[in-house]
Amino acid sequence: MLRGAGLFAAALVFAASAWPQAAPPPRPIFSCTDANGKKLTSDRPIPDCSNRDQRLLNPDGSVKSIVPPTPTADERAESEAREREANAERVAKMDAIRRDRNLVARFSDEAAHNKARSKALDDIRNSVRVSQDRIALLNVERKPLLDEAEFYVGKSLPSKLKLALDANDASLEAQKSLIQNQQAEVIRINALYDVELARLRKLWAGAPAGSLGPAPATTGSPVGAGGKR
Image 1 (tube, helix red, strand yellow):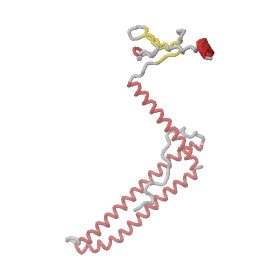
Image 2 (tube, one colour):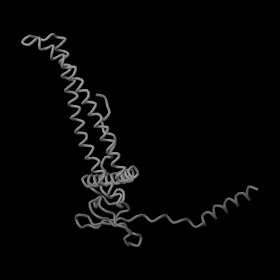
Image 3 (tube, one colour):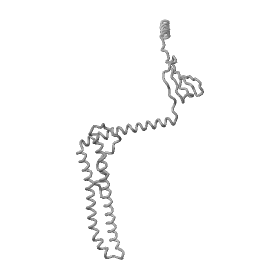
């Protein structure tokens, strides 16, 4: 029994040793000529040739590929900067495409764009009228204060009267400043709609989305319109 088992094990060992073994993969061969003109070979990239091309050879000596020089720190920094710039350009391109598509979806024709412009300007002009009405009311409130102040010509005004006049002055200046800001906003909104309309005309004419360069900020409700006074 034991003898039979021994013979079986020996047969397995013989069979395993007789089975053909897979050949190990060939080791890579790197070859180059260093700065001194000396030809070098190695089974890994050669440090002395890190600043020049190295040839990766096949087992028969033919060239499999060329390994470029290892980039310097400055070259790596320059390459990374170019990559960042390219990524930024891709992001800007995608953003322009998205904005153009949204713009055309929002405004199907010039009439729709003009309607939006009028609405934006109406909001600002309404705000100006509110400020103008407030100024008229402040002037009405100011008249009796000025009439009372005439009794104190050459004298110090009572503190209550002086405070009322100062408060009236401050409110008037605030409303005048607000009107100036809103008038400037009218100019800004018109300029924004003009730029947007010029871009829309090209898109309506068939220009592909994103082909007109960076997209401007889209128009919308002007900041501050209808806000508190």
